[in-house]
Length: 99
Image 1 (cartoon, rainbow, N blue to C red):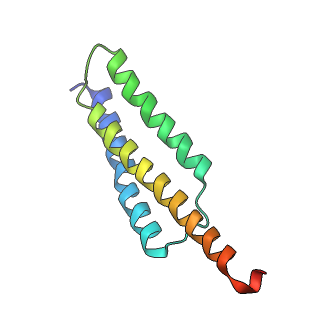
Image 2: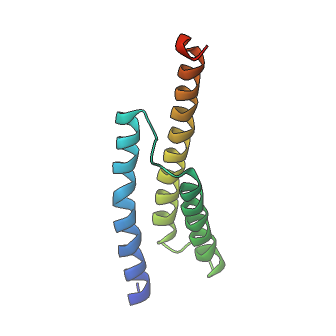
């Protein structure tokens, strides 16, 4: 592994360490207020581009697994945000005070 790949791996590891925390906070709060779904999609596109870069460089570089892992965690966070937004909207529509 050359220096460039090493530093790329460190960067991905550091970013990747924050996604489980974000997922846990979303699950505990059951309220995605303050999360930007557009930002999450943008980050997901970035991780997909990183995967494509690895493939375009002549095969499956070992670093692709960090991109894939981080992208999977972002995708989970996106699903949770959509789920809890729907739950909140359903609660508000059932709330008799909103009639």
